Length: 184
Image (tube, rainbow, N blue to C red):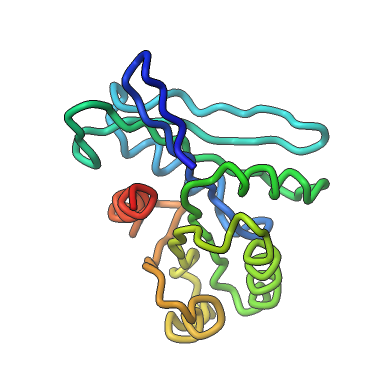
């Protein structure tokens, strides 16, 4: 649920970037950050939480949303690397307004993609959570077809995009789609 700060006339939304280890969550965050105007974004942060760490940044952009009374500020955040405490995912998801699910397109990651998505979908707070899928590593010669990725992960027909996160290909429309969903 968004947080409204009436004193500074701002509504804050949290977008959680989820996905398996090495799917490209951190790379997606860095590439999204690079693509924003420096005046619209905060610095990338890394915050330790036990043996795990949060990575993300916040931004505001008049092109994504403009309101008469308040400005919108979005935080894009993930748990980096191998997560040692699953309660940290639960904590992030409980505070999320939308989820960007980064799926690794390698055939060897199919089961891991489904398992993590199933765990996330099992969270009580996830029932009505807006989600966008990002099928990463589309440049690999053995990447699973988009049709198969959709069948495995996205039976609800949520917005989905293809990307090569290492060079930022395909990321342009992702934030706008996530922000629009978070606002509904």
